[in-house]
Image (cartoon, rainbow over all chains, first blue to last red; front, top):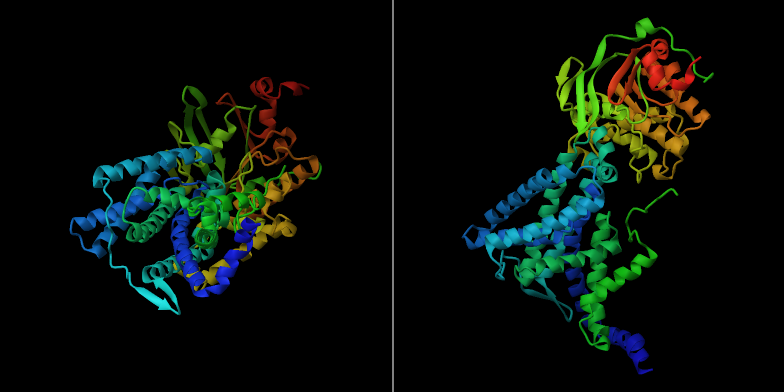
Length: 311
Length: 270
């Protein structure tokens, strides 16, 4: 009885009692969600364009952040370091296309997936070899003051992340929905060979998509790095994007965003109001449980393409 | 195949050489898929490639549009020599194709699938398209118009919005032909367009092939197993067996060739 009360009634009473606190928790959760979304976005881009789950996306986030912070330690000014990192990520896209994807055209998705696992390990090791494995702070001048809205305290850096993410998403959504690249991408994801036969330059498409995914990884890396410092656990945190993708659908850019927000807000609220019932730290696994439940009822995610199969 | 009219007016329909395959050899590891194959395709003709399973017919088409790169030999197309051909070059120079195992974009509608065939014809810049203005808008409408014509031509208006994954096999084959036609090809490569079809569907498909050839003057290279279809449709026939060229000529010549009879038409002694 006591447990039921604590589970079903007490948290809601608390929410209504202290609405500003709830607001603060929600905003904190949503802004963490935005960060998940940024990582998930990179996965979605590559999945849309090649039908491949790019396991290395998380490591790309780390790799981008490592390069940025490393360049800045050399005394390169922030703006130049950002530009150089973008160039490095584009170079990475070229290398991946030339050395990995080109050899694997028309192979099964599982083979491409395995290749991305290999790529993840390579990038992690390569990054460590060049830049070492210390945890480094990243400060590129993102505002880190607080604002007060009513009784709630909001981090400016959270708001900043949200603004950047919304901008990025809008641009990407326009790009993919309204250009022939978008249609070409969907074509490539569906069937490599058919796409080639109608003259879609597969190699260019892959370079474009991996470069864009690299850029998104950089943005995510900057945001995460500024918050947690640049460290190797970033690659693991980035895998939180997985439940986000299951929720939002692997092929939907808006899905990645909304999935991220739901997961972010959900896990914070769950932690704050229900955490103590389960001995705390439910933030760690809450997202995965939500994803699991989702898989039962809506395997294509909230916004994903419905899978149609003739039997 | 009583529904198929005999091909007429050959003299004016068929022009000079459009494509020549020159001494092409292709092997996968130790397996020789094609050895020293040469033949030509004339402008406006229907050219069939026949042969038993594993004869190298599909490999031949794949070499022509650049999916496979032959170790030896070259492709001459519209007066240019390619050794080897590349898929992008082939597509942007007017070679379109269909596949033995249907290769459609299964998640997309019939309309979108056929629209993808126009991808190389679109010239508006990304920004114009993104904003759907200036050339972006007029271009989309113009292509849409062309695609609608293809849809009318193939009589698939009713399935315009249907995701192709849901369509029956015969219709999928038709949509695939539509995608190839949307590119307004000069040379159309059809890899077993009638495999697995019933008699009625085969007659429809034969009719479309003849109409495409006659109305648009499209040159067609056809792989097909159904002998009556091949003999009815083709102007000339190449016969392959175990990667070698066995015979080359009009349907009547090929039908009378003893090598071909032995290797392939063995049962039709009469």
